[in-house]
Amino acid sequence: MWLYLVILLDDASTSYCHYRPHPQSLSQSGGRKSLMPIDTLKNGIRFGMKENLMIQFVYPERPLPEEYNEVVESIDHSKIKLVNATTPNPSFPKEGSKDADVLVVNEWDTLPQKAEVPIVIRTSKDDFFARYKEIFTLLANAPRVNISFTDVEAFTEADFETYKNVLAEIGKEVERLFVKGKTPQLNLLTDRMMLTQMNNCGAGDTTITLAPNGKFYVCPAFYYEDEKDCIGDLEHGLDVKNKQLYKLEYAPICRHCDAYQCHRCIWLNRKLTLEVNTPSREQCVIAHLERNASRELLANIRKHGTFMPDTEIKEIDYLDPFDKREEW
Image 1 (cartoon, one colour):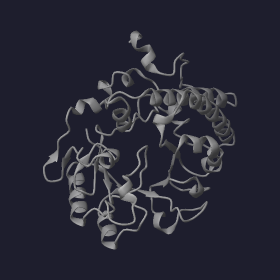
Image 2 (cartoon, helix red, strand yellow):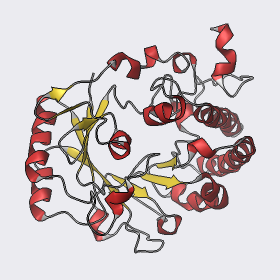
Image 3 (tube, helix red, strand yellow):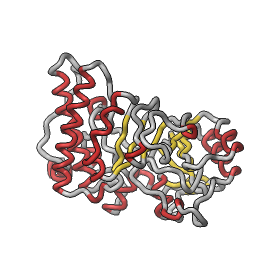
Image 4 (cartoon, helix red, strand yellow):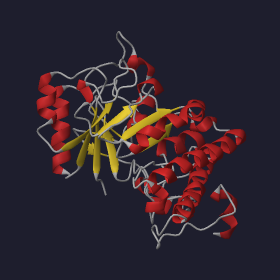
């Protein structure tokens, strides 16, 4: 059942996930750097209204013409915008992103110290390992922080060990904030404590994307990777081949897993395993390191008093559920 419609307002709309926009989209001349035609935007909104979908607009860094803003404001929606890269260490978002519902950080030097809306930090693993302590202030001064790795496929066994240690260090800070009466939200650690079932991306199942060319895609990553890889258009509607494969019950590994916070990225699945419903080892190990760190964090917070007494994250002896396939 479709619930969300993501509308890319421009070929250079910011990425808020693992994928990178097409290189030509970011060029200063020619290429794909262009706005969605205004009629396409209106028809996309009309489609969302007919299907009763929640609309999420993804903005480019450059400002939109005023007529686009008027059309956007004609419907209930949320805005995803980039923290402006020209302002080092902003305490608050710049004028162009002040009305965002989600702010995206693509460069660590633009990381705000506080925010009134959720922050998504897109980062390489090496940058994260080197600069993770820079999120500590933000954890105490933002409603939510999400980390999205741009190079999941590059994680090595040594990186897994480093990630485990980094999560433990972040966990100490989150514990300290909880003790002080704050309630930090960090997707890597606190989500798993709150969830009782899978809460994944939903691309191709509950969420679809409308690109500037007027065609639908499983998610923005599919558009930027190959414009021909569409699942319909505004004129003819949706045409999703093998739609069941995007559902959890048809995911042979994920349906047995309790790393409920895992993003379960459909695009990375296909990129790394050639199957949309089968994650790579890198995704699974990363998710289980987070799961185990959440378990440890939960136990540590409980040392200071009663906390979520009905929640249990059981101990496991594996990091990749594929290793347990014979027990299924």
